[in-house]
Every structure is written in C-alpha cells, then in structure tokens.
Image (tube, rainbow, N blue to C red; front, side):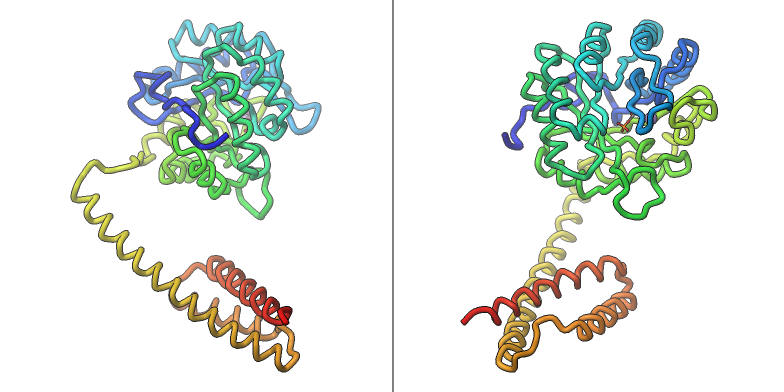
Length: 363
Ligand code: PEP
Ligand code: MN
C-alpha cells in the first residue's frame, strides 16, 4: 500500500468546521456529574468541536484508576443529547469497539499503547468494517513511523475513510522536560508519506504538565497540524487520572485565546512572491553547499590514498576530537546551534572515514 489512500479531509465528516479541529474533555470520565458539567462548559465555546472522555483507561501500572467502563458510554450519549457535540472515546479491543459503535460514539481512537500492537489494531479494524465511524490513530509509544502507518492502513483496509492521526509524543528516549518526547521528525515523515492524512496534536500527553501545554500547542500550529486534542476537567486537581495536565474549561479558553493559528498558504500574491524569492536564495545556497562538500570529498580521497601508502589508520581520534571542538567553536561564533553543528560534523566525519576505509580496502 502507498501514499495514495483516499482519506477524507476533516470537513467531509464535520462540514460546519471553520477553525482547527479542537477536541476536549476529561482524560477519564469519572461520574455522570463530572462528565456533563465539563461538557456543558466546553459546549459554550464555539472553538470546541468534539467532546472526548476515556472510559477504558490503559494504565501503565495495575492499581491505577482504569476507567468507569461501559457505563461511561451512557454518559457520552447524554453529552451528545444535551450539548449536540459529537463524542469520542478510546477503544483497545474488539469488545470496546463493538460497545462504542453500538452506543453511537461518533469518534473512536486507538491509543498509543494499542497502535504499537498490530494484532490489537487488526482486531479493532475487523469490528470497524462497515461502520461510518471516524477513527483516530495515535502514534505508537515508540517513534516508528511504519508502525503508525501500518495501523492507519489496517483501519483503512476495513473500509474506513474518515481517519485522523494524533501526535501524542513518544516514550522519552532522550532527556526531556515533557512526559512524552514530541520528536517532530516522525510526524513530518508521516506527513511526507501520507500528505492527505489529517494530523492533529495532543499536547496534554506530550506535556504531562499544564505549564507546557501552550508551547506544544503553538508548535503544533506552526508545524501545520490541523487540530488539537486537549484534556479538560471541571476540577483538574481532583482528577483520577492525568491530574497535572488537565485544564478547566476556562483555562482552556484562555490558552486558545493566546494561540496563533497558521495556514498552509497566505492567499496573498505579495507574500507568495517574496517567499519564492527567499526560497530561490536558499536553493542557490544549498547548491553551493553541495559543491563545497564535493570539493571536500576530493581532498578526503587524497588523504585516504596517502594514509594507505603510509599504512596509517583511517580513523585518527585526536584529529577528530580537535576537528569537532574547532568546528563547534566556529559555529558558536556564527550563532549556529551547537547540537546541529555536532550532528552535521559527525555525519561528515563518519562519511570521510567510510570513504578512506574503502580506499584502503581496495586493491
Ligand atoms: C488518552 O488520550 O487519555 C490516552 C490514554 O492517551 P495515550 O494513548 O496517548 O496515552
Ligand atoms: Mn490522559
């Protein structure tokens, strides 16, 4: 299967949408009162298009609150009746999916832990056959774009065209202040592989803390995401799950007020002309960069040959350390990001050593 899946735009199943797709509601539904009161406050804000509420909660460790179960579906029905908002919940097996569809849940999503398991995704996809549900697929816990893509394809193969991907961050594999590392490169890769797939961001599970929600949400719009899923609760400090990352509906509204929504194009010829001009300068600089790299390769090859004739090793660790320190220092003076310069020269050096060993190993 390739990138030409006929996945519908959000507008196809939510025709009145006039803003990015905003989904909000509690991490977990806890009581009927908490469910309805949160929903009523959210429904007053025209920027909220869908109500979310977890009823089956996949908790990392046993003993935590695992959701109210099927009774929560009844509360979601009440939300629909009383507010008119479409409702969504997470499903993690065939039974959940059947129950959610029977209860008229409009949107179901596959959680990060489930996306990482093809058997679970297939089991859910099999139940989805023939339904007109909207299905959202969160990224798997590990930054494996193929696993994410595979889950989307399984859902698509069961006849579902209303699909949205949700970026909720990845189990931290490097130091981060966030609960889940955003690793935007994985999201960019998904976008490249499936350009017509709507992708929204879940800043709540990335941030893990209220204080980081705004910066992640803004970054999501800067990166062209088509919406947000943000957890909210009538009284977050008393929430039975994810208390530190949920907002009251009023705090949510304040956060939304501050966000700048960006568009794929400006629909303004003057902007397009100036952008084209700046891009052609970038194109010219990139081609100069490549020509300079090619001149560097020529010299690397001469060095490789010279070392070979004198039986000297390709890798010379002292030279490498000095080179790296020197390049990072020059980069700093030029206001270049230190990590960027390090990674760039690691790549350049790695390729130089590869070329030199190739020269040494050919007769
Ligand atoms: C959730 O949305 O409440 C949830 C459990 O999310 P995730 O699968 O992203 O951890
Ligand atoms: Mn949660």
